Length: 402
Image (cartoon, rainbow, N blue to C red; front, side, top):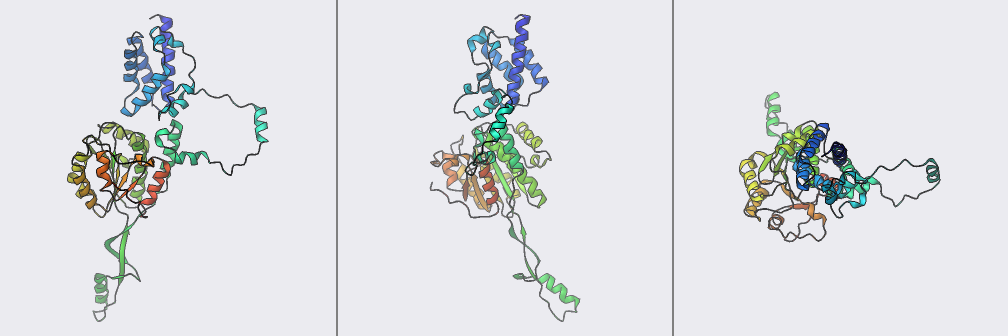
């Protein structure tokens, strides 16, 4: 490789790194230098070697692989020119070259679309004279609230995370066995009544009324982190982070578990002050992220190891999964039955419920539909808002027929 070719290759690799950065990958100067060294080491003779050299230096998490694959296919789209080193001078990419129908295409369009020039002053003046009737026009935020998480661009995902952080969370309270004084309470506190009677010598017995104390029930979230859940689990964990910190201020408890091929308790990680740091730590510390799902064995481990610890005082269980099980539902139904009997309410959160014609044909989903108390879709900002309101204790959705 000549010096001129090496310089052109370096410029093109830097442009590719910028494209990945705009698509949402956290890449800095150190990663860029490592990618340049790897690209110059393997050369352009074989496309596979060039791909894996950049892949190994520019990605460090499993969730970054789909974005990298699509960026590579679009950016280095002509393998014949790449072999001849002429692909180093590709023209500017157009947004219409992105794959159609792919949920990540919007993110790549934003990263690859050239910046539009500033509008002309004369055109701006002409537009100011136009009157627009916006009575039937939705705002950008309204459209974003209905949009599927997998169809959002990088900018829309950042806005969705900001909305989730500011989401108002309603608090459901339930009566406990402890009492608190109340002038017109339905119960008589015998202990306090006897204490007051002793103050007067025991000649009279004043009745002290009381009512049960109200306290928010614990919330236990079991989240599927398999590859089929993707962006839904990441944004739902953002919702759980907001819920955890809100409950911490109201003396409520939130326990979060992640399951794929194994069970991981991440409740302590979500209590960190910085939300981005907490969620990035989850993807690094959980070894089976974006893998398969073994619901039966994971729920068995939860029931035996954690059930008695976290399901007391009428806990509400949020089970987020699409029902696709690697073990085809083996041993799942008895564990679900035990889980349902141990909690106040078992809510199944399934992103596939956004489809009107959804049928639980997978064996894991078929076992779930017969055991849960309530089911809800969780695929958009509106669905998360509805879930937050449901935690107040409103009437649940009707269960479908299995």
